[in-house]
Length: 122
Image 1 (tube, rainbow, N blue to C red):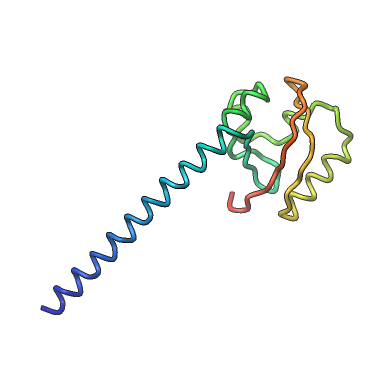
Image 2 (image 1 turned 180 degrees about the vertical axis):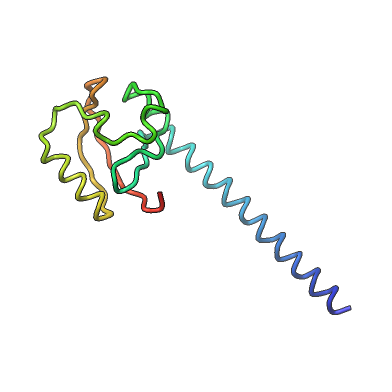
């Protein structure tokens, strides 16, 4: 009887954990939706290679998502900034720091003010 009770308790805990994970997934989805609606978002590794770009990033860059994914940041550089500007960006990415600055895209020649932060798990 105690084995059955332990099994029931264990199943109850597993169900509780599963429900909490579902709630966190919904919460994360909602945050992502809000972020995507409000910001230009890209995710890259410390090597500067895009792993993810949101729809706003695609619109402003005028590149297709498949052209951007796997490409390096330099694909959108306009030549507006001197090379040293991007040296600062590269150093910040390698150090895991957030880089804040102005970006002028190659395709649209628009000024964007943004932040770039590396994610190390990619």
